Image 1 (cartoon, one colour):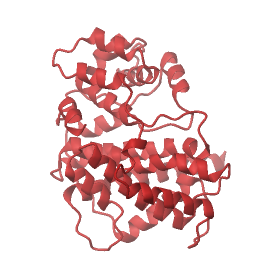
Image 2 (spheres, rainbow, N blue to C red; image 1 turned 180 degrees about the vertical axis):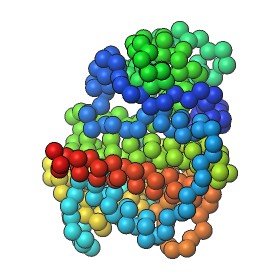
Image 3 (tube, rainbow, N blue to C red; image 1 turned 90 degrees about the horizontal axis):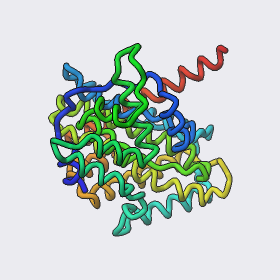
Length: 343
């Protein structure tokens, strides 16, 4: 799967970089509202493309210390679960069952890959069509029109690339022309990885899946922006950000089943053990899908507990992307809460 995606995406940054959408046309908004709950506000793929295609290489920030990462992860986990648990070494009975099940998956031959939703049949067809340098825009547009999520994403991204005051794009055919081949490759690949959130899912899937995906996509964008300065393959860096939380997404169904309607998961000890086991599942999924060994190793290194451990180049990159994305999300949440409290 890795080699297939790599051939389709290519390693270089897009020649033209659309900017994040400023407003959705009615057609795109309506389509998006049927695809995911209102909470699913992940950073658009255009943001990742903009960072990747910047004219000047970003400076590499200093790596966070062990203490900084530990403090940030504690704050992030409380926000992720919407929990207000006090620091405790205790885990509840449902939490223990979830951890035991996830640990079993991490140590099983399949290691969770069979629990991930397979990419819809339309996605491989589109990517196959985009392999040609002379792809048929009309054919691509016709295929995209069969998927309401892709329709919304393509039109939203195309409108984001238009100059202020330009007439809004409402047709898929026009959007395909504006985005171009490389933009479509990036967009479609991201849609392929994005979790499908059933409106009838349980509490934890509806709450956590959009938040997990937002952090994954932001991390992937940060990874690709920093890949050059760190001497890492940009495509591998992008994939590492997307796949790092795959194991956590696998665990959501278990949370909904074990919680039994309760909404009290998220104790500090549970979160710490959950993320360690989930990361092992993510690494196993990356390996099962034949991602580059550097991606698998970086995912395994992400939650290392030892101080002073020397990370691989990809591991350092993923650690930076993970830290930056979580910091940005928490800062935005605090700003939003501050504004709400002053109203």
